[in-house]
Image (cartoon, rainbow, N blue to C red; front, side, top):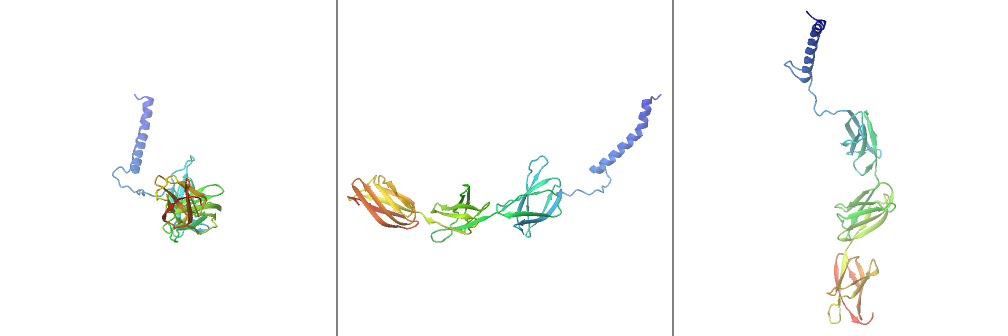
Amino acid sequence: MLTPRKKLLLKLLPGAFLLAVLWISFHNSRCGGGDSPQTTSAPVTNAPVGATVDGTAYVDGKPSRNLSLVFTRLSTSGEYSLPFLVTSDQRGELSAHLDPDRTFFVHPISDAFQGIQILRPPHTRLSIQFTSVPSLTGTVIDHKDNPVEAAQVTCEERSTGRVHRTLTDKQGRFLFHLPSLVFCTLVAQTHLFLPSEAQIAAPESKNVLLRLSPKSGITVEVLDESGNPLPKAEVAISGPGIWPPLVDFTNPSGTVHFADLIPGVFSVSASSGRLVGEMEGLDIEGGKKSVVHLTLTEGVF
């Protein structure tokens, strides 16, 4: 004899069986199981997800070709995700696939342009506007008007003390991108030349010319009247860019060297006890090291 509970289970059994058949059929169609042919199309790999943004990149109101832009996504949690790069074509046109529910910060990767734009797709047409950063250009040459490559050039802002650095190219040219109009001190130098300095107002000063003078040197040998070297003799030298005179003492061999001198005409004097001596009109050429033999005699000069 069937109890009421068993009678209820018998009534529900056909429906449960039908539901099981329907679920198996649905699962096979989603997972590709079974022997029956599938009519659903295969997914396209590497298909872009999100909204397509088309537009033009402008710099100073003109379409900018090959301008590289970084799109940085701001997630819902407030954290930045990895940025991706988009480069405009020859006409400034660009296209990007962005998540339609995210906010993006767009900015150029070059220091020559400034500005950050906030973008929230989708957009049918995007116009990204940037402005060029003021620039300061110039050339570094030597005493023979030849360009100096790999010279270090610094630009120190006089108001803030901030220092910008760069190196010259093969043509001796240099370029600084500056945030605004500034007054700065330009200095160019290498290990072969004396530093050259100029006070300029950037970016109004264009194509600044910095001329480097090669380093010169004088070695002074101090002797007594018998031709013997005099150690610990006091030697003073004066000339272009030197004031007060440079003073040093001879070594045990009776010599002393003065380096990094500006080419020109120099005077040398020396003394050791009651012995004194002086030489004037020493013409020192750029890039050369001269040797001077100074004989001291008893007396005054």
